[in-house]
Structures are given as C-alpha cells and as structure tokens.
Image (cartoon, rainbow, N blue to C red; front, side, top):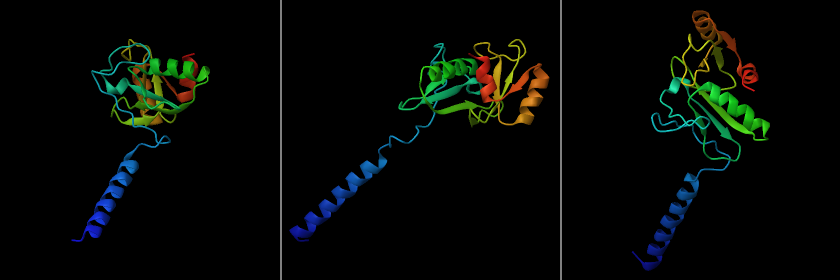
Length: 158
C-alpha cells in the first residue's frame, strides 16, 4: 500500500468516526425517555422513594433534560399546576396504567378518584390511572369513585 492510499484510508476512518459521534449525540429537540428506577428515585414533590410503578408519573419541563418523577398522581398533579402557574411549559407528561403498568400520555389517560380507604395510593390521594374509559368506569364502580379526564383531575389539585 502506498503512503498516499494509507493516508486516505486513515482520513476516511477518522471522518466516519467523527460523523458517528455527531450522529449519536442527543439533539436538543429530542425528548429524553422517562426512566424511573424503582427503589432508588425520589418523588420530586414529597421526597418519598418511588417503589411502585402503577402509582408513578413523570413531568418533563421544556428546556430541561431530566424528568421530574413522582410516587403518586396527587404529587404529580399539584406540581403540574404549580409549575405551569409559574410560567413553566410542560414538554411531556407520562403516567402508568394501574393494571398493566404501561406508560401512557397523561393528557389522554383516564383517572379514577376515590376515598383513599377504598383506593390506596402511596400519599393517600386516592387517584390511579387507566388506559380506557371502560376500565375507569368499572374500577370507579368497584371502589365508589369517579372518573376524570386530565384537565378535570388538575382542577381538583389547585
């Protein structure tokens, strides 16, 4: 191999390495994925360790790279209201299904509110999330609760 060919090959490898490094860098417009480490992460509002995913939630504020995580939907709702009232813009909000623990968009999920003696939650707010209205109505009937959408839930936690 001639010296010229060798230098061209080394240069090409270097360019590809730089291009790969740039391509793998997170873009500022990309939303980071919500990850809750059960038994490790603390609620952004009350400071309690998050131990059960079916009661957890997350808020991502525009311009921030880290999710605020919550152990109870009540903590999540109070913080959502306080943050937006202070001028913060919510970039994303996630909650988890009470039965399947599937991650859901907070704005399209259904919320069941009941007396915490009938529907236990970590901070005793008595609110859980389900994916469908049918599931929400069935659960509300079993626990003597009511079904709310996202915005009516927030109005309860002002």
